[in-house]
Image 1 (tube, rainbow, N blue to C red):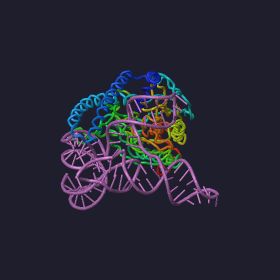
Image 2: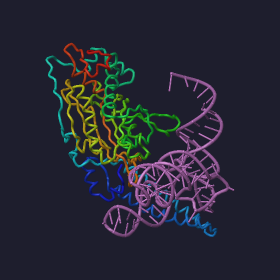
Image 3: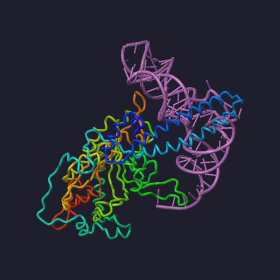
Image 4: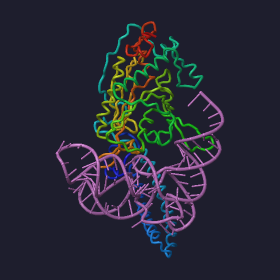
Length: 417
RNA sequence: GGUGAGAUGGGUGAGUUGGUUUAAACCAUCGGUUUGCUAAACCGACGUACGGUUGAAAAGCCGUACCGAGGGUUCGAAUCCCUCUCUCACCGCCA
């Protein structure tokens, strides 16, 4: 969320930046609401002052006046609350602004490829998709998953289930031991304001799985997290952190739940796009000035996993039109999928500046006072897609799959499945 | 699910016969004095949000709100009443 004062001061700048992000947003309406709100507020506060003085004086002669004032204040207050609510609603659906080195464009076509790493393997046999590899090995079962839960779910079995677990443990170990992330095991069900804090709400309600806790009323709403970013980032909400305790780095492996509304017909086959999938998530809490540096570091952490697994990938810098709501700058890491013969997103590393911390009221103490924190998140990595990439890239002619050396200790020393 | 206790500033914690109490005290933090250095001691500062205003800015001044959240009583609420949320203790049930 942005500071309304900044928008007031730099209207033209915001207008330009918002236009670049390719979203429809009526900034003028926001400013009009702001103006009305302030007028009402001023009038209200003037009356409140009067009333306060009367009660302080304890002069019974004026008690009736005070009563009258109360009525007027209530009237004004109702009006102002309504305006403020509209204002907040609008303001909270305004996306973050991009940093200046982000390419301007209206969609993913304007993304910039930053680098390509690793050698794409050439196969001297007809390669299989992960769907066929999974079926042949009895490791991936879509039929039973459909019966259990419907479309876009999967059941992993045997060594494929083991492989999923191995990947998770391998990644967690790497990020904790090597990169200093603190491992967290968080809840995957969260309150409404937690989703608001990271920017999933109010704008993207239709993408979220909402839980009905109380059948009698719809108060106390809960949501399944679409990513561990939500919980990990909110770990610092409503707090003032000591500067010496920064940066904070959290890692967690959690299931992620997404409705995938609006992606009908997209990636319907296979386990590329699921309603539920595991993801290892990296979150950093830093001083705002360190955001860009930390983003590079985080990108490196995500890349390192692919390097260790010897999987070819490319890194792209997302354009203004392709970035997520809360991000000011985003790198996507895309792994090579040999059967589809294309790169597929497997990680998205974003700096959010103070956009989320303002929503969460997450601050740190400086010599001057308290200031908003910078927040960053990135996948390190999406487990489902990583599993696909791994088995497709490491397949043999007979449909067996070689297990990379770094995973062997997590796979009970199996070298091939 | 039942009963009881509680929720106050960065932290600990006073204040609940309603009236300069944004709120004592202590700790932490910052500035200063003292000091060979550190420590200690002493002095001082020290909430947030929003609005207004002065200023080029840094910063200052004024106002309003906020003592878990929301509502109510009252001229006036941290303090009284209601609802909700959460925490703690005990009981019941349970992975």
